[in-house]
Image 1: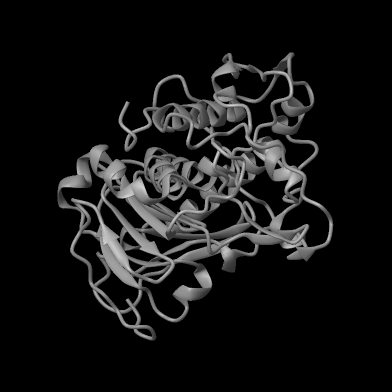
Image 2: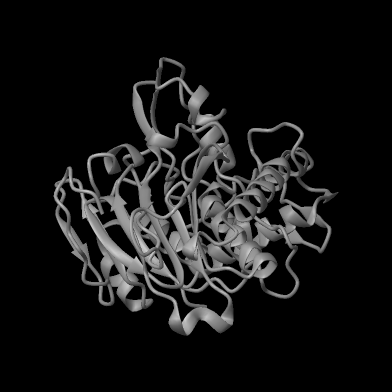
Length: 362
């Protein structure tokens, strides 16, 4: 399977109408990697209407082509994201995810929402040969990421005791039925790696299916554009501004590209950082070592046929480090990689960008 194309999407047969993992409820939206939406391409003048709110601990931006049925689309999106949070959050003790984690080794009946979420996470692991691993929950917990990021103390003297390296390929032992999960003994799922991206895919698919309008949605910087099949040939492109965090985007995007249909996602080590036991951590763990990824890339943005496909590739690239450009190219992924000195590397297929200086608006 191509890294750019995990096969299960919200519209695929066999998935639940709502099937998406959650990322981090309570996260400060300003810390997430950001891809900002520009003006509706069908708007004749001025700025097209945008709906924005907080969900899953991050920000949500939503537009429909021409502003058609925008309020209905926002209501539907909010309902979808609420259901995702209720069933799949690692930070809600009443979620189905936490129930399954507490019963590792046993079959646990869960919502189809969580079943779909876990299937997507396993596909991402399969597509990356385990570089994107959903079974690293214990590592994040023992490193100090044991509550929503908004409640997480940025620096603490509490120790961070992490078993290194983690058991490899434990994700292959996760068993999934239509209404139940069985996790291997001592496994602890964290679905954040694919969470925001799949939420964006799910929202977009739900709006297109139920309301019949073209839409673009950003959930914490993971973007999905989608449209009814009969409108795609005439649909203009959506302009999207890219920055390494939402706060940085306030100063103007680093680059603006256009997206007609599909996904765009950014992974960044600049977001979600904390200190435990005198060591600095971030949320992108290298499953080969159990340590935060230490490669040369601060930010990776990738394009995929879905937001999940894009985010799977961008996360794997951060973990891979120096070999990421060759790996992305070999898997046909168009991507933009920014190192810690702000030097930019792109892979074949990355679109020619409209580059803005800081302070400009897209």
